[in-house]
Image 1 (tube, one colour):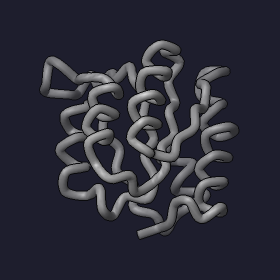
Image 2: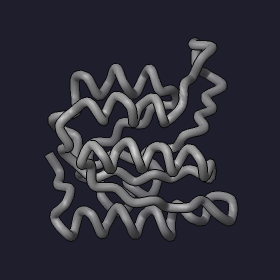
Image 3: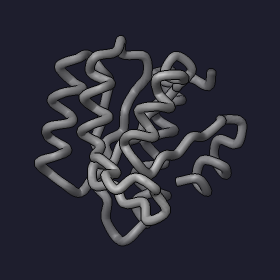
Length: 128
């Protein structure tokens, strides 16, 4: 994802978090300047100091209590978690879509990058 964003949208500042607690903490100070959120559910960060890395659903629960300010891309292969996150965020009024991972990481450069560009070009997300 970093490589795709650096190639396609080099002017955007990118923040990537491997744990739900780290992302939640970051969002508390930066949500107002965020132009797009991309969420996986099943997080794995072997370098994380925390034993509990959380889930994307934890982040969705926090976002649902905030005023929607940017689109979300749900990119998890965990179908039940994707449905739960979509329900939580959708009910709270967040714009969202789902991108299904496939072919190892080929989906990032294909489907995910296409959706990122679509949101930016449609004006639903903007560089802040």
